[in-house]
Length: 281
Ligand SMILES: NC(=O)c1ccc[n+]([C@@H]2O[C@H](COP(=O)([O-])OP(=O)(O)OC[C@H]3O[C@@H](n4cnc5c(N)ncnc54)[C@H](O)[C@@H]3O)[C@@H](O)[C@H]2O)c1
Image (cartoon, rainbow, N blue to C red; front, side, top):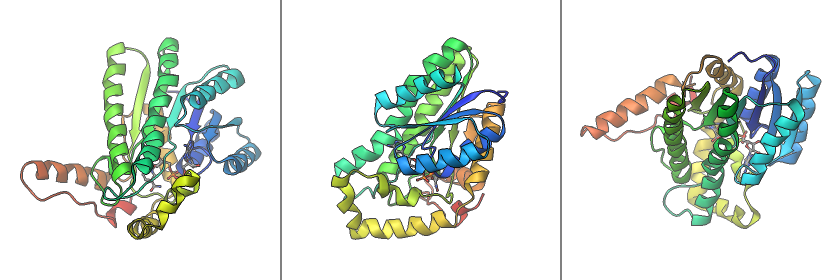
C-alpha cells in the first residue's frame, strides 16, 4: 500500500506500540484516528503528535464495546473522508492460569480478543467494499507458545493468531485488495506491565495476590529490558507497505518457540520461553 494521504485507525494509540506506530505513520503522511480508554494519555498523545505536524484526532474508546469501535470508524470517515488501515492493538495482561478469577479472564478476553473482533467487524466490510484496506492485529510471542503466569493473555493472543490466519484465507478467497498482518512481538519497553491501571475498580484488589505480584515482577523486568517501540512501529509500517502477514519483531525467539512446539508434538521436550532471548530483536 502507498501510505501518503491514507487514513489509519489505531486502538490503544495513546501509549507504547500504538503511539510509536502513530508517530511513524504520521511521518509517512498518514492521517490518524487514535482510540484509547485512557483520556489523559490520549490528550497528551494528540498534543504531541499535532505539534509534530500530524493530522490526528482522538476518540475515547473501549475496544471491548462494539459501538465504541464503530464510532471510531465513523469518526475517521467524517474527519478524513475514508479509512484504509486499522491497527487492532489495544491490549492488557491478566494473571496466571491457576487461581485467576473468571471476571479477570473476561476482562482480558473482552479487550484482547473482543477488541480485535470488533475491529474486524467494523472495518473489513468497508475495506472490501472500497477494494482497499489493511488490518493489523496485535498478538504476541505469547500467541506462539504458552507462557507461564499469563493464562488469559496467552489464550487471547493464540486466538488473535488463529483468527488472523482465518481472516488471511477468507480475504484471499474474496480476491479483493485487502490484507492482514499479525504482530507477534517479544518484550517491548511500554506500559503493558502496568495494565492494571485500566482495570475496572472491582477487580483491582486481585493484583495484591502474591502469585500475581511474582508474575508481575518478572514481566516488569523483561518489559523494561525489551526493545524500543519505535522498532516495532517500523516493522508494522513495513508490513502494511508490503502486505506481509507475519510481523516478527523478535524473529529468533518466535521461530525457536514454533520449532520447540513441533519437537514437543513429536514427543520431545515441552517448549519453554527463554525470557532473556525474548527481550532481544
Ligand atoms: N510491550 C510488550 O512487551 C508487548 C509484547 C507483545 C505484545 N504486546 C501487545 O502490544 C499491544 C500494545 O501494548 P503496549 O505494549 O503498547 O502497552 P501499553 O500499555 O503501553 O499500551 C496499551 C494501550 O492500550 C490502551 N487500552 C487498554 N485497555 C483498553 C481498552 N479497553 N480500550 C482501548 N484502549 C485500551 C491503554 O490505555 C494503552 O494506551 C497490546 O495488545 C499488547 O498485548 C506488548
